[in-house]
Image (tube, rainbow, N blue to C red):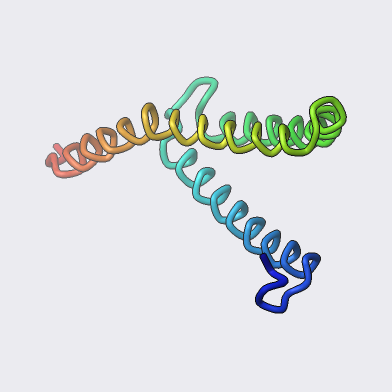
Length: 120
């Protein structure tokens, strides 16, 4: 605990939130950069539409997220809410590692092979 090293609980909470929020913003930047590197050339997931869908999802989450969080805490308590947050983060990490990361590596290899081909 923070009291054993001379940090009051409120100060420990503020320090941990500062670190967590900085890491979340860094992670969001990496994910958006990955999204923009792997958009389709045309269609509903080209560069412009992918960014549009991202902004819509971000706005919807920002609007509904606080209500959903308060409802979850009110119905099941703060510990259950924290457990749900951890489970959701682990599920997204598992889906990313299982589905997105392998395709990114194969896409990068195919792009490098394509770049080495001579142009006519």
